[in-house]
Length: 148
Image (cartoon, rainbow, N blue to C red; front, side, top):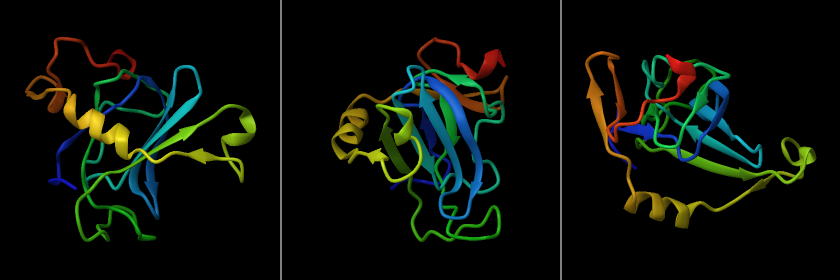
């Protein structure tokens, strides 16, 4: 739960594999870890401006990068529709030990409750960048996103 527009931070670095609309998840982002063993799913992002404008499918992102904005999109066959009652982030973590677990019946998705509690105690500070017109990490490191 949160406020619409709250910046969403990448939990771990990796490659953006999914970026776009899904009738259930609304605007969503999928990031595969660099070693390929974890897949992070961020869904129900903000209507109209769901992602960092510079983010593209195939980009490399780093832990702490601002990747999107909290919203309530999804559960609609029409793109860019708010059909969720309460703004929130659907956050998922898939573990992958071999290729058969990427899609199909062998998928392993874990309960992220304790991970979310840990992340909540160790938040990444963000700030509004007038230069980029987006929220960015405020720890002095440059954001990933393919050097853009």
